[in-house]
Image 1 (cartoon, rainbow, N blue to C red):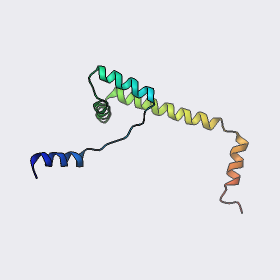
Image 2: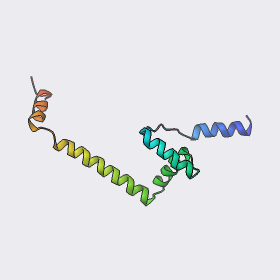
Image 3: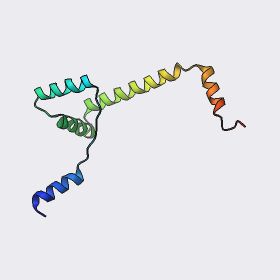
Image 4: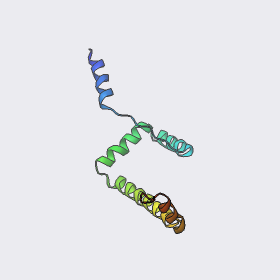
Length: 98
Protein backbone atom coordinates (compact mmCIF):
# COMPACT_ATOMS: atom_id res chain seq x y z
CA UNK A 1 0.00 0.00 0.00
CA UNK A 2 1.47 3.35 -1.03
CA UNK A 3 1.80 6.34 1.30
CA UNK A 4 -1.05 8.14 -0.48
CA UNK A 5 -3.34 5.12 -0.10
CA UNK A 6 -2.44 4.93 3.61
CA UNK A 7 -3.27 8.62 4.04
CA UNK A 8 -6.62 8.20 2.29
CA UNK A 9 -7.43 5.13 4.37
CA UNK A 10 -6.50 6.96 7.59
CA UNK A 11 -8.67 9.94 6.58
CA UNK A 12 -11.68 7.70 5.90
CA UNK A 13 -11.25 5.92 9.23
CA UNK A 14 -10.65 9.07 11.33
CA UNK A 15 -12.99 11.62 9.74
CA UNK A 16 -16.74 11.58 10.28
CA UNK A 17 -19.39 13.26 8.17
CA UNK A 18 -22.65 14.89 9.19
CA UNK A 19 -25.72 16.07 7.30
CA UNK A 20 -27.09 19.49 8.23
CA UNK A 21 -30.51 20.62 7.10
CA UNK A 22 -30.86 24.39 6.80
CA UNK A 23 -33.78 26.50 5.62
CA UNK A 24 -33.16 27.56 2.01
CA UNK A 25 -32.71 31.26 2.69
CA UNK A 26 -30.31 30.63 5.60
CA UNK A 27 -28.24 28.31 3.40
CA UNK A 28 -28.16 30.83 0.58
CA UNK A 29 -27.11 33.75 2.81
CA UNK A 30 -24.57 31.69 4.75
CA UNK A 31 -22.99 30.39 1.58
CA UNK A 32 -22.79 33.90 0.10
CA UNK A 33 -21.31 35.43 3.25
CA UNK A 34 -18.75 32.65 3.61
CA UNK A 35 -17.85 32.98 -0.08
CA UNK A 36 -17.06 36.65 0.50
CA UNK A 37 -14.78 35.60 3.38
CA UNK A 38 -13.22 32.90 1.17
CA UNK A 39 -14.27 30.19 3.61
CA UNK A 40 -16.08 26.98 2.64
CA UNK A 41 -19.15 25.82 4.51
CA UNK A 42 -17.24 22.66 5.47
CA UNK A 43 -14.45 24.72 7.06
CA UNK A 44 -16.97 27.00 8.76
CA UNK A 45 -18.80 24.14 10.49
CA UNK A 46 -15.50 22.49 11.38
CA UNK A 47 -14.35 25.81 12.91
CA UNK A 48 -17.56 26.11 14.92
CA UNK A 49 -17.24 22.53 16.22
CA UNK A 50 -13.59 22.99 17.14
CA UNK A 51 -14.33 26.31 18.84
CA UNK A 52 -17.14 24.75 20.87
CA UNK A 53 -15.11 21.77 22.10
CA UNK A 54 -12.15 24.06 22.85
CA UNK A 55 -14.33 26.12 25.18
CA UNK A 56 -14.81 29.30 23.14
CA UNK A 57 -16.93 31.51 25.43
CA UNK A 58 -18.81 33.19 22.57
CA UNK A 59 -19.88 29.89 21.03
CA UNK A 60 -20.81 28.49 24.45
CA UNK A 61 -22.92 31.58 25.15
CA UNK A 62 -24.77 31.14 21.85
CA UNK A 63 -25.43 27.47 22.60
CA UNK A 64 -26.60 28.17 26.17
CA UNK A 65 -28.91 30.92 24.91
CA UNK A 66 -30.41 28.58 22.29
CA UNK A 67 -30.87 25.76 24.83
CA UNK A 68 -32.58 28.19 27.22
CA UNK A 69 -34.89 29.45 24.46
CA UNK A 70 -35.82 25.88 23.48
CA UNK A 71 -36.64 25.02 27.10
CA UNK A 72 -38.74 28.18 27.42
CA UNK A 73 -40.66 27.26 24.25
CA UNK A 74 -41.36 23.75 25.57
CA UNK A 75 -42.56 25.12 28.90
CA UNK A 76 -44.75 27.65 27.14
CA UNK A 77 -46.38 24.87 25.10
CA UNK A 78 -46.95 22.83 28.27
CA UNK A 79 -48.52 25.81 30.04
CA UNK A 80 -51.00 26.19 27.19
CA UNK A 81 -52.32 22.63 27.47
CA UNK A 82 -55.99 22.43 28.45
CA UNK A 83 -56.13 20.83 31.91
CA UNK A 84 -59.25 18.80 31.15
CA UNK A 85 -57.67 17.37 27.98
CA UNK A 86 -54.54 16.46 29.94
CA UNK A 87 -56.48 14.62 32.66
CA UNK A 88 -58.63 12.87 30.04
CA UNK A 89 -55.47 11.68 28.23
CA UNK A 90 -53.95 10.43 31.51
CA UNK A 91 -57.15 8.60 32.39
CA UNK A 92 -57.48 7.08 28.92
CA UNK A 93 -53.88 5.79 28.93
CA UNK A 94 -53.65 4.79 32.58
CA UNK A 95 -51.93 1.44 33.18
CA UNK A 96 -54.27 0.99 36.20
CA UNK A 97 -57.43 1.16 34.09
CA UNK A 98 -59.19 -2.21 33.82
